[in-house]
Length: 563
Image 1 (cartoon, rainbow, N blue to C red):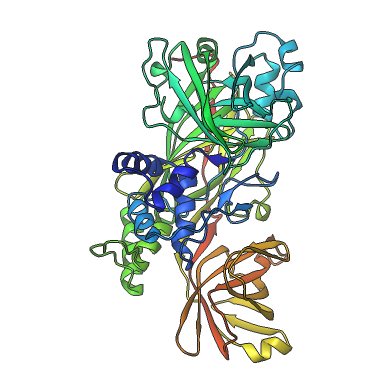
Image 2: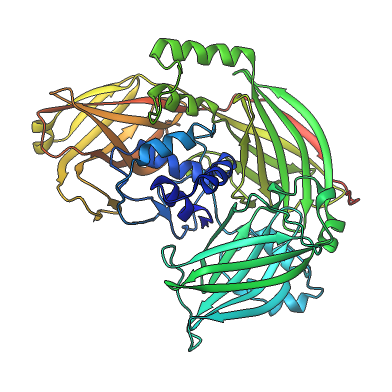
């Protein structure tokens, strides 16, 4: 899936938007974790805006926090001062390292019979989450079957599903012979509008939706609770518009509008107020605020906030490492500002257990879900978190398959994820590396490096299982991370002439028998064009998993819908 604002983001970076359009986009990025992540990837790259890396299709095992492994689409290389623009917009967003998911996340809606589900397009699409299936089976599917043609290309809106949490539109793009045109981000420009029957704009900020191909269909998907946070503001009916100014690479005008009845879905929504707090031993206060259950999902709202002790610890780290944020420089994103983003990122993992002791759902914010293997019956949302105004907390919305009403459950906290400074440094003799493997141990980490290869082309090149852009050097590695550490960030390299290089890495993660994280992967040292005598590798940040949590919250789901 792709955020609807990805193309505007590219235009923002290249100076193609007007001042008004730029301000609107900046407000969007403040709430869109996907766009924030894309901006970060560009800022962290040492290349001069080689391309905006746009995720195309999501693999089946994509998690709520993994962005690094997304397939990438290359856009033309522009020349303007993109770094200044990306820095300015990123400084207006606080949550930077939080990974983002934008996979198929549907709701449910308004067709009255099971037969409509059986005959629906939704039923034929692979990979739909269990919440969606439950909603569809209960008859919450509305046929649209409206189309509009221009330039010999037809936009067909086939079905819509919606409830107070989320909406999805299933569509197709076909040529004049009725043949499906595969969706391409560079050749299509779509937008969504939401209005009341009287014409009031329900989403004046625009954007916030994502779209991509799922099987034979184009799926446009939106977490509508982000602009309808109060259920009282949800109208009985919304007029939804799907518009396009370019399809199949041809400019034109396509617009399909249709009403969506929200009354039925709102009537069955229930809200369980909880308000239970827990103070972790690590200076984080967690509050389970409430649970909203609609036909497609039960959505947990969690508040995580720093305590004074955590704030003091972070300030101490900043002072020790020279990361104290000072008056920002125009067009410059300082190391201190970059590090501050990590400390804001607060992750959790929890399980939902029924009264018989069965685990009915599990959520995990881990970057690498295979390490814990507790994710179960998840319903992903593209909009999963918003940083508090003071930058010292975050509100999270985590969706699971709908819980049964009038039942007793408990939430059991599994893990907390926090970032901290790291001290790993290793000197690599490159001449030796060309002939034999090199093993280094530092700060309780062990890295075994194998081979040194230069990528001498500027363009895109697939090497092994990964695609790389720009010139650089590749080093394969295997690693054993320190106990409790589940990820490392902010890698860099320095050669014997003291020249610094950005380093990115890819790899597979697994939990070893020793309980520690084992990694197999590749370092890509950007812009390194000739073989040095030695390289000093280091990383400044690491993510620690805390499992010493002892918090269980019993709750009962309501059988009465509340508005």
